[in-house]
Image (tube, rainbow, N blue to C red):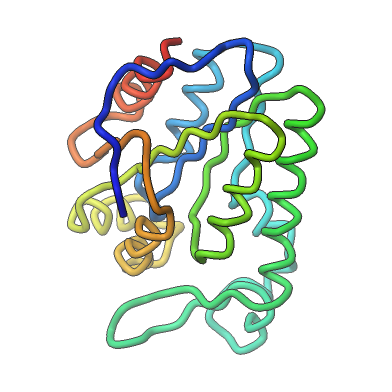
Length: 199
């Protein structure tokens, strides 16, 4: 994983862009995405979330049982909680990326709240460059102890999943910006991204 030196972006506001927030669960991507959409305050900026697409599947296709093997199956390996993506799960995410491409070709900018579980997903995102849009990759990271603390407080996530998914940070080859939310609020994190984008 290569991280570019953080410098003010020369983002051309007349050119379409897709802002990809990648990182593990509970790192704060969704809150940051919501704030960014509000602060940019433009009618041609939409947000997509992997959670919305995963939640389109029937509940039995997302979980710990074998029934979820074709969707998104949670499993323990070496004491680490992870997610296995089945054929249907891959199809859903592929369609998410296709939808993003269609939005860009329609003249809309996109903020994507993502958990890039596979290298093939990263390649699909990279293919969005074919639309002529600028891609800005942002790693949203957090200390594992803090992630576990957040999972317990939230109560709606499997404790250990966030630390088990830390490896997704490496599925993007390079990042334009890294935001560590361990001691930074979503508002502060969003402000850092907006400064980089020159908004």
